[in-house]
Amino acid sequence: MKTNRNEKIKRAVVTALAVCICLGILGAAAVFALDAYVKSSTEERIIPEDAATAMEDVDCILVLGCLVRGDGSPSHMLSDRIDTGISLYKTGAAPKLLMSGDHGRENYDEVGTMKDIAVAEGIPSADVFEDHAGFSTYESLYRAKEIFGVKKVIIVTQKYHLYRALYIARSLGIEAYGVHADLRTYSGQMNREVREILARVKDFGTSALKPEPTYLGEFIPISGDGDITEG
Image (cartoon, rainbow, N blue to C red):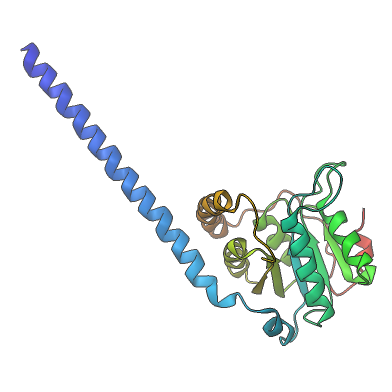
């Protein structure tokens, strides 16, 4: 009797392990399938800078935020995003820049850093808007539409990040195109690429559910004066 009981327990354990392995394989397959779908469905919206410059009726260039160092200087990735956005503005791709990032703490300000650099490069302050509550890619795009009234936009970030940003924009009803800001090789990029696979899957779900961002607020037309967004 004891032997039969042990055999039953053993078979149950083996069956449970087999089920877990199968579920794990199916889960991994689903993750990679969704990742591939997000990338393939937005690939054609990633365009070169000269094509972006030739477009018409673009409301703004949306530069997505990234790490600012403790001394207030932008990280390499953020610096390249800012430089690409400035270049697009100066070649006439859009009449406004929208800097969107994290300013959730008094002593950490991505968007202020981004605007300061743009203005120092000769862009009129009134043409540079700050979105202080762009705490995630989804929130940046949601607020671009709902707070700033953006309907057609050029998004600037590194290419690995553009797929997700463009997918979110499309899900929100924004006509969006992307120009990548890969101006150098970035350390730790392999880790970012792996994390981005999971982030694409997460925002696939977020884009379907469309939750409100952390903050909304009063409407600020992107066609107006960017100086009212300072602070």
